[in-house]
Image 1 (cartoon, rainbow, N blue to C red):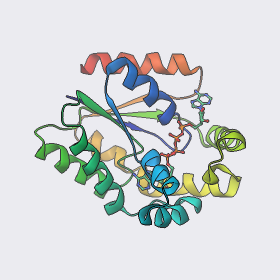
Image 2 (image 1 turned 60 degrees about the horizontal axis):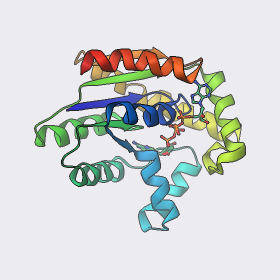
Image 3 (image 1 turned 180 degrees about the vertical axis):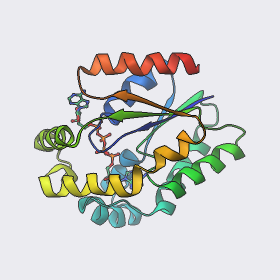
Image 4 (image 1 turned 90 degrees about the vertical axis):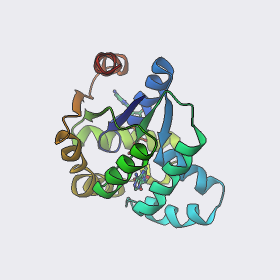
Length: 191
Ligand code: B4P
């Protein structure tokens, strides 16, 4: 199986590039952000709890997202592999993902990080906020909170994969197609 963690700060292009990667490599896309937003749209108890945290730019509790990923892995037993988009976002999530995959006889092939400077992230998310309707893209202060949350809790996850020699990075500013082709160059070596 080809199991990839697509990593990067909010607005780095994870969702954008995941959509292209799953088509080219026929993988299943697992975005915890999308899963949480669908819980919110469905008005579930989990969604209601998550909404307050997401609207404040904070991460939702580890056990919530780990449970969602476990369910999705179980629902896709014949997948050729997965693109994990926005997960893991903390070290406990990374450890949990390792054991979920080990229990299924597989593991993470690589983490690929999209590198984008903070100024560009804020500008992209403010632009997306004008049309996405996403409440967490609505103002600069909130976006800065998300970046802060990333720097303190999520950035250390890269070391987890570096220590396993599974870390790769791609510069994430430029044409979407050019970034995609740089990602594909790494994916093709991993296949
Ligand atoms: P996510 O849904 O993961 O949202 P995100 O980090 O903002 O990234 P996204 O993938 O949507 O954006 P992209 O970079 O593609 O998370 C939302 C919230 O959910 C989190 O803040 C947290 O509260 C919660 N959450 C999710 N997962 C969690 C977890 N595991 N643990 C705890 N909490 C969790 O794109 C951004 C914009 O840039 C787009 O408009 C796009 O068009 C544009 N763009 C992309 N590439 C570009 C390029 N090359 N040039 C110019 N613009 C580009």
